[in-house]
Image (tube, rainbow, N blue to C red; front, side):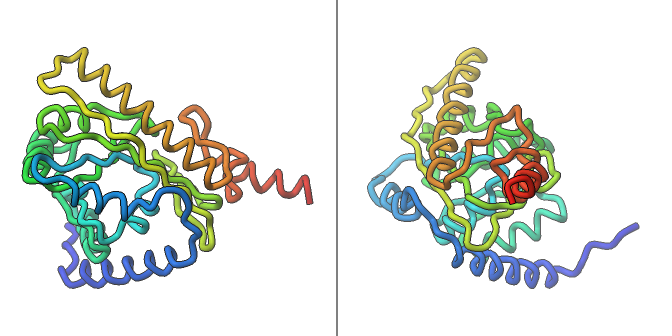
Amino acid sequence: MSREPPRWTFAVAGFLGAGLLRLLRSTWRVRGDDSRRRMLERRAQRKAGPGVIYVQWHSRIMLSAATHSGCGTSVLVSRHGDGEYIVQTIEWMGIGTIRGSTTRGGGRALLEIVRALRDGRDVALTPDGPKGPRLCVKQGCVVAASKSGAPIVPVGFDCSRSKRLRSWDRFMVPWPFAKVGVVHGDPVQVPPDLDAAGIELWRSKVEEALLDVTRRAAEIAGVAAETADVDPRESPRNPGGRAGVEKTRRTA
């Protein structure tokens, strides 16, 4: 039976991880929206009422954490052991956490999200997580918005050069000195008391809005927009993928 690592190892790993992420961020050329300013202005203009739900694709977590550090947004993080490493890292980045999982005890996680939104906290969600399908919005963010009255703001990220991992979401690890595109979409106000058909209708609207800002971020970064039907590890848009390497060899 494996033993859980001492708690100090989580803190040290989080401190080092946050430091490396800040160092990587310092080399990027970030273009598009001044996301941090827009988020802080939106919060300052809100006199009362619920917070905001920011949605982004799961594969862009590194880009989001690095470009939105210190904004005070809270994110949903799993309660399992690996989640503690993530908690420590993002808290060192000035990002709050809500512990839970949409696959294990999902109802409790939804309640925690709605409670945080009603308290005026902003929450960031990855609506295609935690296990996919990639680039497909699930209903959780719509249900949370309907129950809390919070608007949903889609945020698109992309970068000119990255390593794509073999994970279900083809997780994006941006290279140093990459050009990063960031685009905030218009708020989507979901009506209250939706039935199943209404939830699906608004789910599709949020998905299209998130795909749209992702396309615009890709244009800023100077790459082809990612699509769900093409594996980015094989796509020429990814200079680090096999297809990109072969293309480089042919043109060399």
